[in-house]
Amino acid sequence: MTNLSQLPLYRELQCELDGLVFSMQTKGRSIFVDVPDVATGLKLLRIDSPPGSYLGSVHKLKRLLAPAFMILESRLREQPIGVVGYYR
Image 1: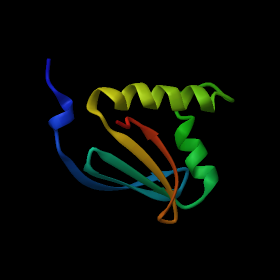
Image 2: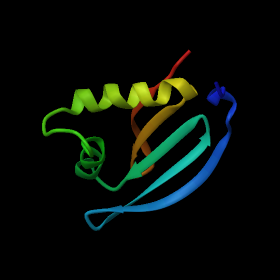
Image 3: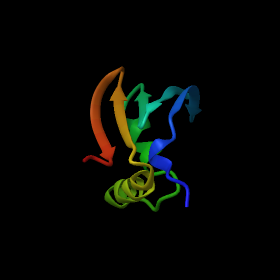
Image 4: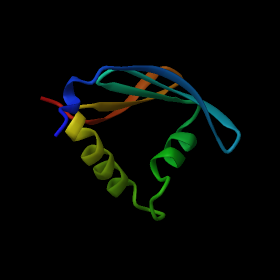
């Protein structure tokens, strides 16, 4: 099995959801998602999830990030507002 914890990632993406632009960056084991408003952040969180299941989406993210020892930091106009993922 591949040890994903040693896989360095460094990328920057410009993305769009429902006409709103947001950015995603990776630096080492961290993923940063910078959204223009809270509504866009919530839309991203509930992609591929039934309505009203925000907590389930967070737990799903944690399970996806854990094998690679990664974190996902949500930012609102470059200010951190939340973090999900692996912590030692």
